[in-house]
Image (cartoon, rainbow, N blue to C red; front, side):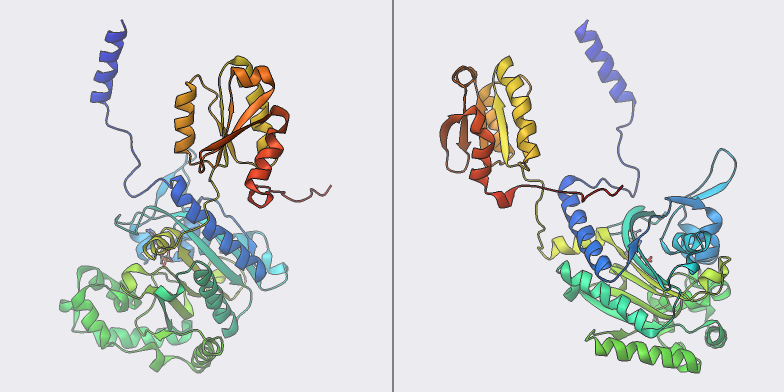
Length: 451
Ligand code: AMP
């Protein structure tokens, strides 16, 4: 019978494909989570210091939110959206970036009535139907900061400074080069696009397929094409800095002055335009010093026209986002280790029904006191349980066998030293705490609840 069932199981597993993650997405396993937890801690700390409050917009929104927010002609909207119809036939999309949803929320919740500017941050997964490769996934995490409701070059610079601080806390700031540019406002942008079209007239044959379309639909993107031939042509194209209106010029000069004031080095990059339609004036990216744009860790810019485009009052804003998988990759490559909060302090091994019952309570008491405890409450032999304790790399093991139950004692074993002592069962918890030291205990108080 058992043999028949086994055969049937084998047949089923042969017929069905192995279940695995979908293309381009990945599990974040516990070892990587330690990095994610650390990054979130740093981000939240820096956000609190600077008065940002956390927001989470839904994972999916009506497609229009992104279409209007990000722009029809962008790669994200044209090629990278995860869209689907719900059962009511409404077109929805998984969020590919944070800004559009946050602006929708700003309008929907009348945040213009809050004290301005509204400073928000989020730590969220995003979704893009990108071609998967190292550092480029279809679901990825970003931390994102936005200041909405005020315009001043000092805000752009404070935002850049904030991320410099975060990257510094993470130990990787030195790996990146801040690239900046100004792409003007809706007034001078028109002159620039005309100049660009004039420059490219007659050069169409030298462009890649995508750039030929960009020439019609989104000429700014001609400047940051990664194809060799297109890059050569782009390097001689008109520069924004020569065509900015007086207001944008002063704004840009102030940004650079304030960056210098805060001691932030930067590289002026006249080809930096960012992929999204909504930017105005300042745009910036942090490029990997060894790999350049391909491996930017994050970027952002000012988007003074977006809230109006999305149906709100004219409202200036600035923001940036950083990819967290890429942060983790850089931290690991740089050999940066983060605190391992998951280490187990104590393993509880037991034998026999009475011992098992006593250990249930003991494990709970240890955990309540902040001792990170695991116990093998299955039916394994004492030898097997001690082998398991070794695998958890615990500092101490408590052992409760039939003899100890009878005597009202328990064995406390120091795993590193290989020494052990017999102590009264009632003293197990204080003895463990003394052996570990109070400072090692994992105590957490969520804070007092207010009624
Ligand atoms: P973007 O707004 O597109 O410049 O994205 C900001 C940052 O998010 C990038 O610099 C990357 O670090 C990260 N990012 C963007 N797209 C992806 C992706 N498909 N996979 C992983 N990280 C990404």
